[in-house]
Amino acid sequence: MIYTEKDKEEIIASLTWWAEHQPLVRVAILTSSLAIPNAPVDVFSDYDVILVLSDIHPFFENRTWLEDFGRVLVVYRDPLEPQDGFLKSGYVTQYENGLKIDFTLWPVEIMKKVVADAHLPAEFDAGYRVLLDKDHMTDELKPPSFRAYIPIPPAEAEYQEVIEVFFLEATYVAKYLWRDDMVAAKYIMDNFMKQEHLRPMLEWHLEIDHKWTVKPGPYGRQLKRWLRSDLWTELENTYTGAGLVENWEALFKTIALMRKAAAEVGGCLGFPYPHDMDRHTVAYLLKVKNQAN
Picture 1 (cartoon, rainbow, N blue to C red):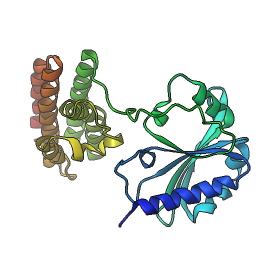
Picture 2: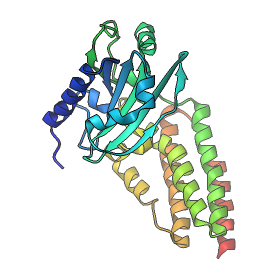
Picture 3: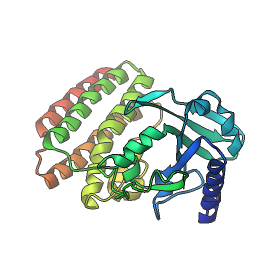
Picture 4: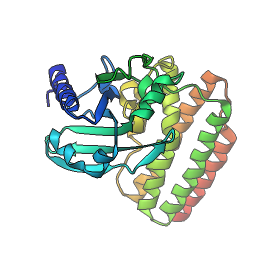
């Protein structure tokens, strides 16, 4: 689907017009990628909108106002939660026409505290755009640096822990594969091993290559764009179907990729790679695999 800057601005204009005509809405702020100049966006990009309200309860208790932007397909409502001593909430809203708006509901007191604080919260420092301010509440809001959510170099202890826990999770995968418990094995391998431990290592790797300037995004969304091509190809090859043999192969491919990426990251940062732990753990995994045959 073709998505243009005009499409984005028309949606933003409609959100602003709507907010202007809601007496309880005092400020409307757009955050995330759609508020960042030249950020890559498309037709499926979320509109993350903070509504600063003189009273959040009517918007929390009656959600019919969500229909002002189209027919709601599905929605999730956050509970009322405290922040800085005041209650906030929000709606993650998917519309039938493809529009997705994530509304955050703040009382004015939270907005005032954000303005008064010495540092912007990460959500704002990543980029924001004030759509409406009826009371000049944001006049003193600090400008964003656009550097929030860029990873920073790990300490050696963090680097070592990521590798150690990665190999610990590998022993669980081997155990579940031995039991032919594929759901559990794939959950540990694709979620814990890859998302929680391999992905940070790959992100540190790409940050080294790009001088710590890249926002990789959640879930590894930008890895294909920024990761070195050979590492990306090896990562793709770790994903497979439900066969027992192919998942054993995927486990050892995942380990090989971690070994390669982590050794390079450690070499650049001056951290030793734990070769002995790697070697002994792989030997143990092979024993488990051979018992399964």
